Image 1 (cartoon, rainbow, N blue to C red):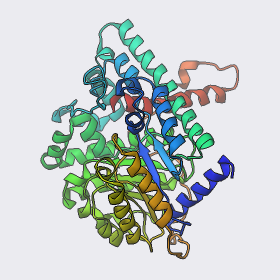
Image 2: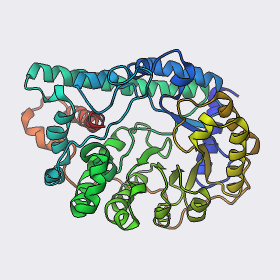
Image 3: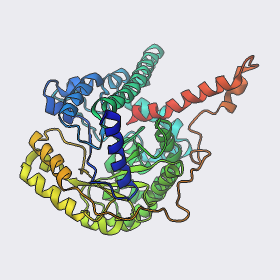
Image 4: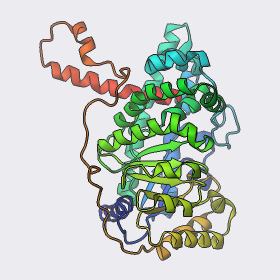
Length: 458
């Protein structure tokens, strides 16, 4: 088979699992950021963090050795130049703040006070541009207009080039190595995760859920249009594959009662919005989320992949089997510290558990860790290929009222994320030619802005 036929066969396998149909065998999916750098050992983490081409070269090396993946997500976090251009303190950067051999770190920063919730709720985009970004990026806070303009110009130039290179490398993995992508666009944070991770700080965000739940709930609702604009405007492929990606950070640490108030309403709203537009979504349920499994049964059937980190898989199958596709199965510790035999035993145990469940994808419970032993990775892939057959089941049929009809219209109600053409049209006076051309390009650049703001803050 040629590369395209191989890709088509793999995509059929993955899509059948997502659709809760029976594939020929359990798909194996990978995702990673700097795992190939650790494997290659040709470059330091600093070199990879400062050059997407260096990071991609390491991926070429591992994909030349392991191309059995039915799909793979490469997170090319080579963000060093943009962080330096803006003076961002978001990450501890390899070679700048920490050892050049260390992986980048995400310190817990509190960038807004509790008294500022009202401003965030009133206009999330304005508040983040005017308050959060200057506090995070000292060059963008400078009173020197030249310095500030140069910093923003360099960051914008870098961001555009970085996005385009990510897309081109994704095409290379598919066309050269026969490895299709898993995700498209920028990750969809849920509002409370965005609030805790990037605005209030994680510890303070958890305290706010207890101390000021009404303000947190209102802020989450206000952030929905921004979150959706980031995800949808950066998803170029459209359609039900590749998937949109949602990592969940706060939910393992809150009770079902708090989950009902500040987490589930906007989670369900965002899922309904993206599914209504024909997308499907891969949700990484971090840590142990057993306390929320009953509520998760309400996710739309056949539209969601539930990627499980530490929640007991037997319990996940009990609650979610036949409703959403389940992914996971191999703890990263086994890849870094285990033996090939231990990897094989764990893999066979998980495959046995899901042998009658067509909606299952085998993957590491997190991204592939730096330090993964090659022999363990090979044992894992070989075991899936050998023992991953699925018992045939009838094709999944959507319930009445939950079909693939797409919705249209605005992203979500709330403060405008984009500067609409009709609000600036008067500034142009009389237009001699085709106004639609000018409007189209205006709106195209507006769609570029939310992902840029996202990455300046994230």
